[in-house]
Image (tube, rainbow, N blue to C red; front, side, top):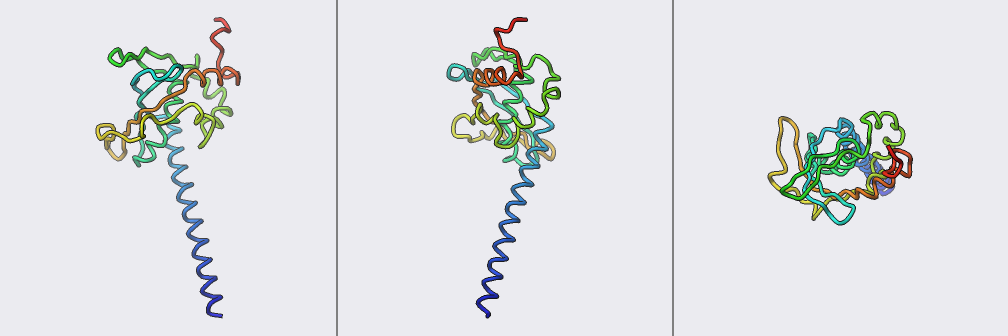
Length: 177
């Protein structure tokens, strides 16, 4: 009888710890999404990668440094689609206009972009952290109560453009003016 009670207590403890762990992960994901939904980031061109890719450094803001690092990929894709970035002659980067011709596109196609930018969403196909993913000391700053973290990412620009054209989200280069 005592063994059965002990076994039940062990199982109950395991179940509680699993749910607590899942809840903490879900809360961290919600926090990351909340930080990202504000689309607070800065973008710098670092260089031109392999053909069809762009190397950019994205500075993301969050109360937790690891959340800012995780959101850098999402912010990079958002920047390429809706913001663009200035060139940098020192690194050979040309100025890049946003893929979207209208700033209102995000609201007009909200259903598409909500799914596209969901955790593990389609945006992940077009971006990767460059190098080993380590953040240089000068790219991790405490600003007030949050962190500003800079991460270099590689964006598969040409593939992203083609995918958005195929989905009817942006007009193709050959569609005329």
